Length: 58
Image (cartoon, rainbow, N blue to C red):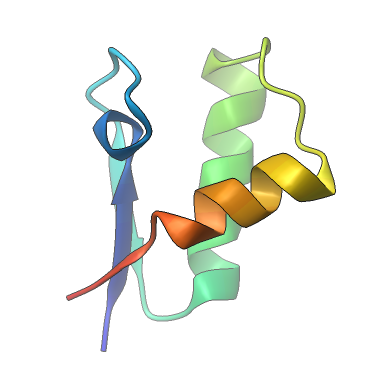
């Protein structure tokens, strides 16, 4: 089952979204996006856990 997430899920005013076959693959895409577009977000263990909680099963 595919996994998906979007910035809108986190309440951000950003149209980015992604989907992948695994959480690991999806989190890799999330990390790339955050580092490129949301430099104000620190990717610490607390924020990563929050992001993972927003992942949807498709």
